[in-house]
Amino acid sequence: MHDVPIYLAAQSLSTVTPQDLHHYVNNVILPALEIQAMISELTACQWLKLKLGYECKEAKKGIYIDSHEHPDVIKEREVFIKQIDKYKLYVVYNFQPYDNADLS
Image (tube, rainbow, N blue to C red; front, side, top):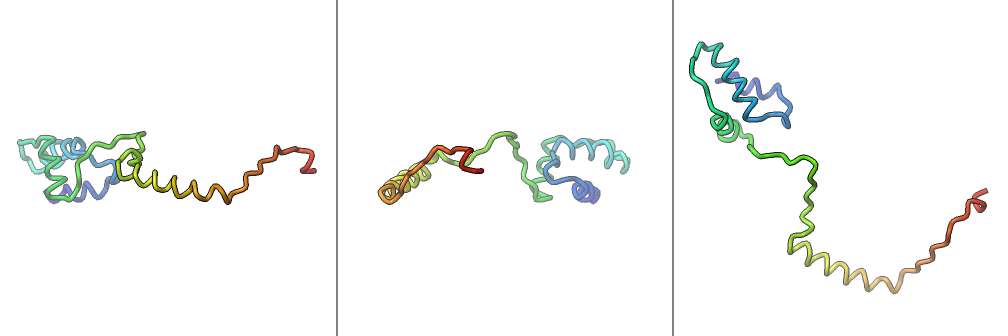
């Protein structure tokens, strides 16, 4: 199975999946070795994780998770807001409408 690391090295990291490894082993490597057996996707996932150091996990596209609702983050945010409120006394807010005529 020394061809598996060579195959994986040729792939982009974010594109390696157990399904692709399963397909490659069953359709390329095993037939080249004249082996009639096949591996399952679960076996491919276990090889990736245990033998090759990859981690099998589902990638959720389009979702950004910043932990803003975790209890420790909420507590720190409350402390921060209280501290910032103390500085409001020292900040001058003087917003003037902007006139294009002043720019000429």
